Image 1: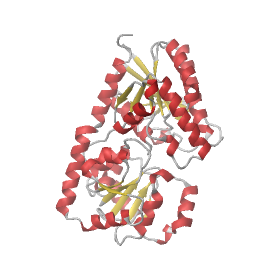
Image 2: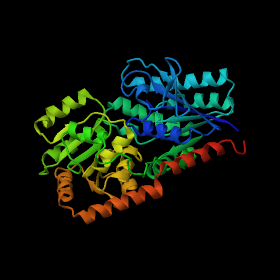
Image 3: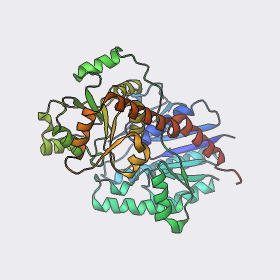
Image 4: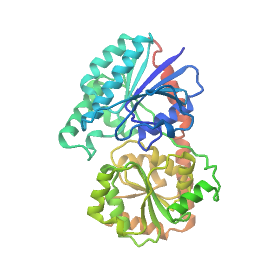
Length: 405
């Protein structure tokens, strides 16, 4: 039986957000499955929007659609209306998917919503999807209502929206066991049906050699040598704690560089510069984005240590990818990161001196200890977070969606 899965909520594919990485990998691992048909909604404009020209193998159909990993990807334009644009985007995506199902007489679709942004209309969405014989699943990711980038009224809306989303979703898929526990306890009166399916990472080493031109050119561009840099990868947003990372690194005595691979956020860069004057520290390099997956893995493999400051998400793919490739991982101490890293990582707090002391510890760490941490991290990813395993779990979930109905 063919199953149509409509994914709404990710802005793009293959970028530094958890959702974007997840959708990229899920469609990649399922691209040869004739029984699974993916329809992925993407942003056509604005922050985080899709540029399919940078996706290897993407095939343009028209100005609005392209094929990628055999998934049908649709670009939706979003008006410039501030924080409400995220809600508008999700509602527009859902309306589009419902119209598409009716027009093409698709029965038993699976609507998979990423994030909890449209809670106030979830009851109506569920009713209309059920009329098609389908189901509505949701992945809340982390605590959107805690993100510092949102003003207080917006955060209050996200909390209400989360509540209503959980109330109406046929299934809440949690990428963290802590998030699943939180959903079950916080919304116990709704008796939510939940499932735990993590995000993943690749364990195979980068196929690039140490002398590969792509890697050599990157090292030369940023004036670093292998294992002579600390690395941070992720969106340049407040909840990823770049302020703490920069401040503590600047106060450290390391001679190594700090390479930050991140998206462009001029407003936040200006704010960080005004607060920290990081441009005066020659060790710090904002290296832009690297969407070449093979090159990025090589960069991770050759980092002296990885700095991870994410604070409100669930299981973050960039952390798992670092654990699979980098020997020493220095993580912000929150339950999400502890769940993923376990005893294979080291942890820091926001208190002044915490991360600086950990950087000093990393500087003095014997190679044998570095190797042992690296082996532990790889083993942890292999046992719990391989993309192949995650993709297989999702395929099983899609197959079970209508069993007994």
